[in-house]
Amino acid sequence: MATTMRFFLNGQLQEAAVRPDMTVLDWLRGPARLTGTKEGCAEGDCGACSVLVGDPSVEGAEPRVHYHAANSCVLAMGQIDGRALVTVEGLKGEHLHPVQLAMAENGSSQCGFCTPGIVISIAGLAAANPESGEQDIHDALAGNLCRCTGYRPIVEAARKVIGAGGAGISGPAVTAFAKIEPRRSVSAGGASFDQPATLNALLQLRKERPQAILLGGGTDLGVALADYHSDWDDVISLARVSELRAIRETDNHLSFGAAVTWEEVLAAVTPIYPSFATLIRRFGSTQIRSMGTIGGNIGTASPIGDGPPALIALGAEIELASQSGHRFLSLEDFFLDYRKTELRADEVIASVSIPKPREGQDFRVYKISKRYDQDISTVCAAFSIVREEGQVRSARIAFGGMAATPRRSPEAERALVGTSFDRKAVAACAAAIATEFKPLTDWRGSADYRLEVAANLAERFWRDVAGETVEVMAL
Image (cartoon, rainbow, N blue to C red; front, side, top):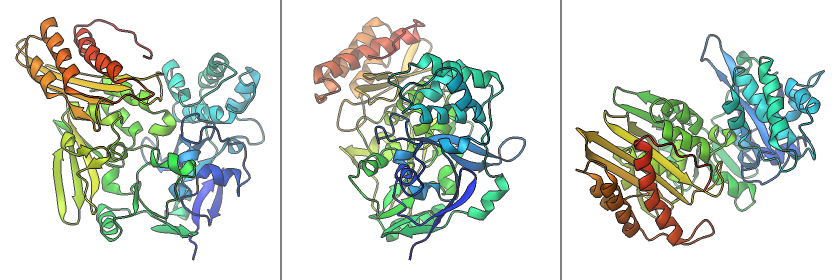
């Protein structure tokens, strides 16, 4: 028997008895007949399908509904149960929304295909932060591709709205969400979608159904779903597990629950690891960062995932949990081989913790890709050294895109330890990197290119630490 999903659609209570693995985009353009939301790339890249997803928030002076932009092409219907959904049609009341009006008045649209998604992204920014600056505007638009208008008039429209004090989103009050409490489980059409609220409940489900898909944000798994390559008949969602949604801080460490989104990680690491923050902004748009999770990025075990190299260089520890107990290991030991990890059939990733910066520590992470924003890495390199009295006492260097797994470079680390971090030491470090890896050649770059770039990044790290400014937009 089908279980309906309940959510607010453009302010109105909605129930949908469809397969929970149906994409929100397909539902909007199909049963809902809201075709303002467009399908472009169908893999969370172009932003044409952007919608706003709202959740009640108790942060700040008074409770409110917090909205963020998301890619509906990689968002499953089960993921909006108990939430609010706003499409471009829902922004307009009796009059155009201020963003729509500014886009029209400013000539910010030509063919118009991308325009609804752009309007959604700007509206989300204007509602969340009416005091946004220039960088915030560009960051909000980084996940929206426009091939014909050019971004100047679009950015000018955003400036106009922000300059006028922003604009709100019309939708349900926080108290209305009590009517649509998320269901423990929803099902239809032979597909089930479980939403445990506690870690104990999650571990019980994991033990009973080890074959089920563990779903964090779905920004990776959702690509196959959007391209009709797979169905999700059995899903266990991590999004509502309270323990996995927590960020804990001690004097020396930050610990992120596995279901913490990259947008939330970004806010936490920006003050202490600005280089890591820059990386996070580059490997995912605001739409992706609001959905994708730190645990999912690790759990997919991609050799080109951007999170693990930075986390490994920082000395991250991962917590794995099952009904048998919890175990902790260094993140570098979690990856065994291509797409193979230490995770057992009855386990889940519970948390990832990183040390706070030490006195004398220098940390940088670099991403080399064909375009600056939202692109797959050719090489991702992370360097961390700690110096005492002018000498390198410890070094951690990790790479992505250079092997079947994210990997440290122990010989390169040894080349730095005990030195004064001079040119000779850096040259030895670069030489070691070139001999420690045997990367593949693919369309992103040849093996020789990867080796040369990886070695060159050691010198870039040295120059950065020395205070030289290097402007590199995309390589």
